[in-house]
Image 1: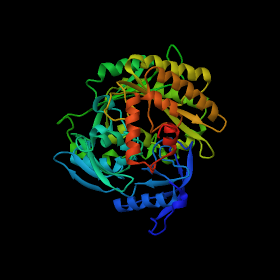
Image 2: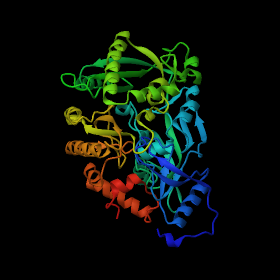
Image 3: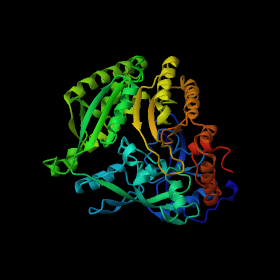
Image 4: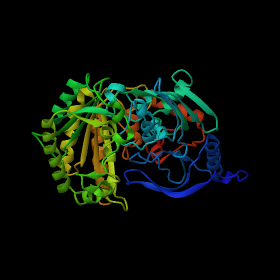
Length: 486
């Protein structure tokens, strides 16, 4: 698009000029931010970008850790004001929503009717549109797949302004490309999604303390046929012979009749997260205490304390926990990311790798060893089990993921990026992939190595066909697709 072809004959949609930041705070840019409330306003926003000769980056609530919703030198279209739940059928559990509806809005609408979203992230605040663009997964990915697997159909506004309805039969190529398509093909504006019937507002949770990473993986394999959720916290500081020690949480839905008072547990009040930590400290202030521990010695100590607490939790046996309490661990401490710093190029990145089952244990152990040798140890590690899905730019594999939170400072940034590049070569050599909702370090050459050539070529051909003027871009797309798009 040429800035010299600007047109002013239309009324410019309302917008704000804001600093748009990735959730991890390590990257951001100032943009004009448009917040449409209708499809007509989306189309007007596209026209405004064409008139200004710039591209548009799409944004939900900005929960992607990296640069997926940052669009330096361009506009940003944020969908949070298109947030109506259009319909919900308690007989089928099918919800019809505008794409700006958050996971929180969805579960609070459907839970009193005895339903829960089939797939949720570790935070309840992403929008459905953003969740589809990143094709989010949860702690039950090995059992039910990604959020895309729960979607029946969606409407998408193309760069031309045309609105198409996409499902597995109609516009199937666009359906499978836009889910997980990084927001590069159009604006998803309506989502029809299936939800899960539940008979209680609680799940039954078991804790298993594990002395090594391999022990945790063996537990997953032994229980994945009978468990509805499996997730493990990993202590990345622990070295051999306890390399990758941690704590597995194994949860299952309660069967009909197991909860003697389902009307109580299905009530929204039962799902409220605690207002205080340890019953005393207001949770909104906890990040300040965490900031005092936000260094290697402090986080090593905190990880050790969590490991010891996990042994106690295991001895206490199974317990019941609300769906929200189990699912949304990242929401227990508001703004916990501020413990990593709030100014300059400080913050965190999450480096999440997906590796096929055959080599995952070896690769993950080597990642931990190399990080310890380099003295760049992740402050948090999370292990999950996965299954493949049919979406074109999927991150999923028949295998495992390890998500690692690395601290970013101006002094450590270059060294951390070099370390991640070294780890990326290891992951790609073993058939691994990466998750773009978290990524800030993958390059275009890494992107090429991640996918079969025909799969990436097919996606790029569709992009050229429906968006020849590159209306939709982001810092992420420019980073991972640079030189590949034409």
